[in-house]
Length: 110
Picture 1: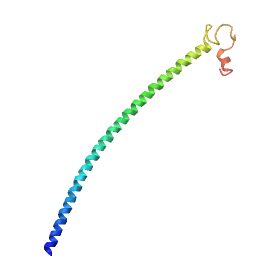
Picture 2: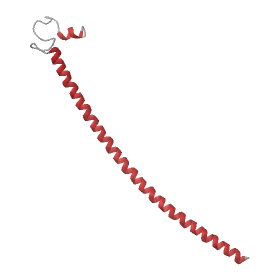
Picture 3: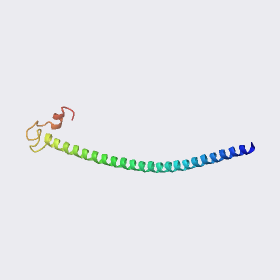
Picture 4: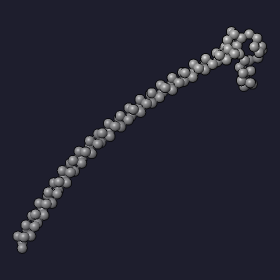
């Protein structure tokens, strides 16, 4: 009976050691995967930051170009409306003498 018990205990101990070894290997694999995923997340965060910085710079350039375009269009339209020396629809000689052209155009706002 004692030998039988010893045999069962030995078998159980071997099985437990085997399970422990398998779990240990699984833990090492999982830790390796975890570290590689952490590195990948770090690289992706760096990539996202670079993309965001480039997008911001691109947006600023685009806004700057659009602002310049609006300024040019504003200058062109002012020349067309208020051009001097005979130019523009409100320019020229004899148009509303003694009255500010801008004041007349904006009807009392100038």
